[in-house]
Amino acid sequence: MLHCRNDTMDLKKYRRHATLRDGTTILMRPITPEDEELMLELFHSFSRETIYKRWFHIKEYMPREQLRKYIYNDLERDMALLAVVEDWDGEIPVGVGRFSFNEMNNSAEIAVVVRDDWQGKGVGTALVSYLTEIAKERGIEGFTAEVLADNHAMLHLFEKMGFFINKELVDGVYRLRMFF
Image 1 (tube, rainbow, N blue to C red):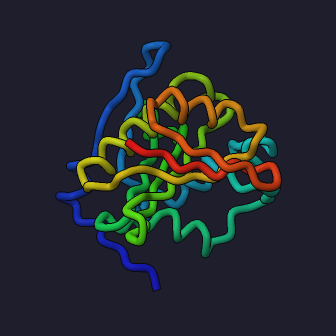
Image 2: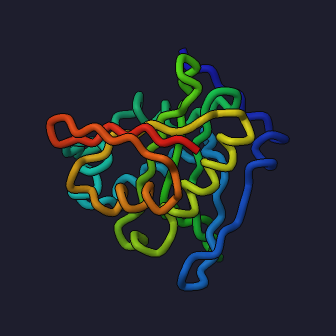
């Protein structure tokens, strides 16, 4: 059973706007159970390549069980942020970033994925920057991640964040330990 702690007060605390390179403003906010449709919309916007780079295999659909794991945010251990553009019709999902705390080594596994037509605009940078800030506030010492060796954009993103990075290449996948 998933533990969910989506206290409205806590959720408002984590809302933040960011301005992208082209001047567009995005809102980064915790994912809630009410975001199920937005998360499905975001998933269906991904190309096969983006899906492969994020999950290391092609997924034709998002299983409901996995989707529920993404939309329930235990703010005590984890953080999942949805990046949206606000317009007259509501919110347009453009990316998602999350970390999951690992108490054994006081680090958190991080993952980020951005809608194809928004890649290269700074959405991923904004999400990783904000997740880093939240992790530091919680006393977390760094992130871990697994990144395909040919996912140059994600590797570059982590490198430009200024983390001290240990890389281990295993079967075409970099296992990263990033220290703040």
